[in-house]
Length: 171
Image 1 (cartoon, rainbow, N blue to C red):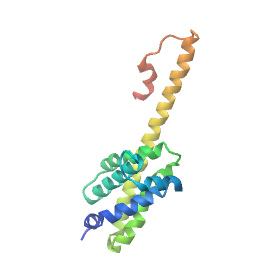
Image 2 (cartoon, rainbow, N blue to C red):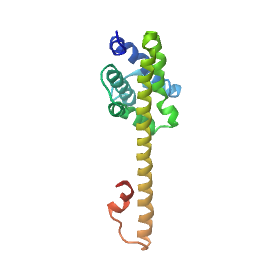
Image 3 (tube, one colour):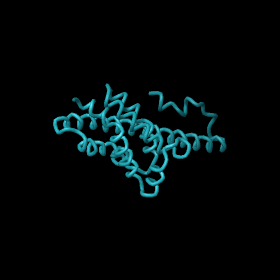
Image 4 (tube, rainbow, N blue to C red):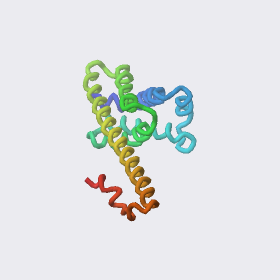
């Protein structure tokens, strides 16, 4: 038996426990709502979270790269990037998988599983930093627009082109 086979055999148990551990990182009232229903329309954050966790478990049970992990984590990391989480708190839900895995993994596979989870954490952190950078750039661009519009109304500058506003992002 391999780690990947153990992950496949215990997929639903891992998903259920990991999802619960993830929603438990939210305040109690939010966690209650997120855990109730995973319908995309009634509870979009809960649904996206569950789908993302399931995708990650599928990747770990098959072949994956840092890129595929990052892409799979994107939906839930985007959500957590705009919420009131610190960087550590935003990716901490991934570490819960280690504790859950310990209850299922044979001790012979624990080290390999821990390395796999560490790769997921690194991918999650990379994605979080990219999301936060995008947020910063959006805020900076919007500030440029507002300041320029004020100067334009005052007759101090001429019309600014879109590429002038986005010039810093083209690099």
